[in-house]
Image (cartoon, rainbow over all chains, first blue to last red; front, side, top):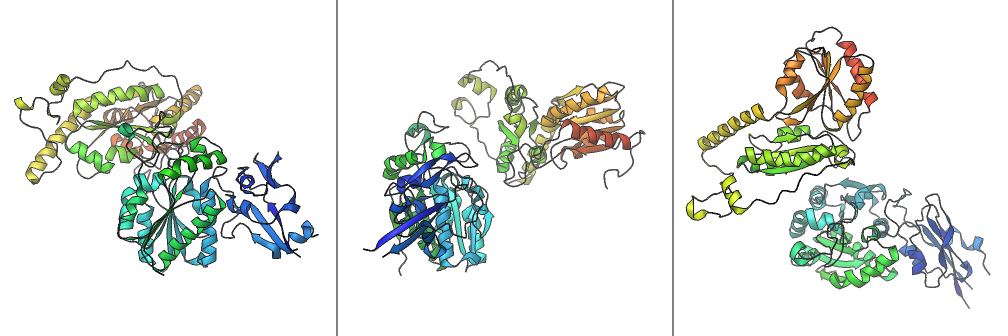
Length: 75
Length: 257
Length: 287
């Protein structure tokens, strides 16, 4: 059965750790990292990318446009 | 089973930061609604192919540096005077997209005269109005749009009618002006609302290009720092308190297809 | 805003305005500046009028200024501007607050301000009206002449300044107000340590300006350094006051930058080297 496979790439230096992406993700695949970037923000990262379907919710709510989403239909 | 390296290739990209939005880190607080709307404006201008035909007028307020983030030509207006500036630009360059981007302290307080009259004259401009019911940049003071009972640094016991009057529904005033063709209130707190806001701003920009009159898109927004909350708390507070007073939806749309 | 001052001056309405200057022009910077001197002293509103301008240089003085401003504005019935800058306006220092004075009673107001429009005692007096309009030019001229006579009286009575280390031996003078005077006090210390006979005149009222004292000292000193954080506004008034008796040099930063004592020292030394002999070359400042 065809399945949508997705993955995100976060610009971790641009991220301000606002957490809105984590709240927006319908599959709870985004959390704030325990590591901080150069500005001291806990940047967002995706856990379990295999479960991501590339819905782009996280990227749409991201205020700073830090998230790039890739998606492909897997047959 | 596809690997991550096979998935993350340019052909599979479905969403990214619009290229019109440059890489300059934005100074807005984490979770600020300003940044989301900037991103939408960049996407729309790109989609409409108007990069070389746009003049943006930025305000005084947190968005005073909007000109740093979007690669279009900008004019920095004095506090509240953006509609006056936009009037001049649009009349001198009638075929350009001219939009103002203003906060509530800018548009609904010091700029009330300019706002009402630009809308009343039906200037073919798009006004983007970021309403977070507070003066954010200067540290969270009360604005004409501040809600009843809301606590800010200049009404620390909460806004009271006898001392401070009532919150100003300036977009409702806009509905009754004949010069406005499109008046709407949106928000950017959820994916669904962001999509609607994008459609609304796109409509406003098209109205400016098609010279249909004045459009105003109010974006009911958060100010996490001014409200002294986290971004997620601010979004919830907005839903609970701002939306009942500033309800979302189209208030006026006289543009026939 | 300036329109408001013109109207207030036109009907002799008391009022105190606090103006805290920063780097400009336009939206400008948020750092301190003294580039609003001309705007305050010469006004931008239409017509012939003057306002009193006070120039505090410490937090205590800013506090005391308010009482003085209120006294002056009601005494002379003209607007008073307290002209501060972003440094004096935002710094933190110890302050002794004055005792609280309650609001005047109706009787006191009726007695002290018989011109006020509040209806008090109307049965026993002609009604008052406050209006800046005057259709008869002769009447307007008469009004202007009355105000000029008043302004001359203010100039005779209300000039205020402070002298630091000024005596009959003083060879050089620094003129500075607000933050510039605080910075210059350190420069003064540095110069006096190396034996330079320099003093400072700190205007506390910018209008009326201490013309007489500067004129007197200009006859004695070899050179005057006017220190202000702008491109040169008070310096013109200092030059006018000297009547060409001594050269007046300008020192200061602008746009929100503030001089350091070292900056003022270097400008002083440049001035002193050019003014070594007591003579005032014509056009020395028109380079």
